[in-house]
Amino acid sequence: MSKRKEKLAKNFTYDAISLEILEYPTVPDNDLSDKWRDWFQENGTRLLLFARGKTNSEQDAKDVLQEAIYRLWKSYSSKEDGTFDPPPLPLAFTAVRNTAIDFARKTGRRIKREQKSDQIAYNNDEVAAWFEADNLIEKERAQDIENALKRISSKYREVITLKIWGELTFLEIAEALDIPSNTAASRYRYGLDALRKILKPNIY
Image (cartoon, rainbow, N blue to C red; front, side, top):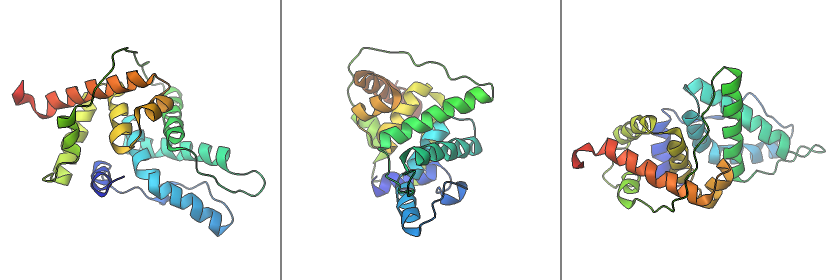
């Protein structure tokens, strides 16, 4: 993740994610703990950002992320010596998404099924450039983008989050969300168009 995107992501989540939200998992050996900590510190912010898009509050997002990370740790740690092999990032996003669905079901909320589309999409360079603009006022722009993201469909929001902050390819997004890659690209395009209408309404 570029420094600009990382800084924007931290503003977007209000506070930089820390390992303190995870009371577990832990492993006995310091070297193994360091390996786990390094992986989480590299990817934790973008995973929390994705979790926030799937839940109704910051605390719910942290709870979902904590449970998802615990599941990953159980799956990717050696049962013999506790050695942790970091999972592929798309799989980590899938774990967060599935955990959020489980969380919603347990609390009586259901996530609507995403509709499929067959159109092949293209990049909307003008809208995507907002996330990289040199004259960006980081904090204010992050708030504008957060508000705009809340107003678009969740199926578009999650693809945009994975593409821009998660830095995944459309193939990786397709794997994480269990959808065709052209559908992922289409949702990215339509989502950017929706954001464009919200953030620059005067041109319409």
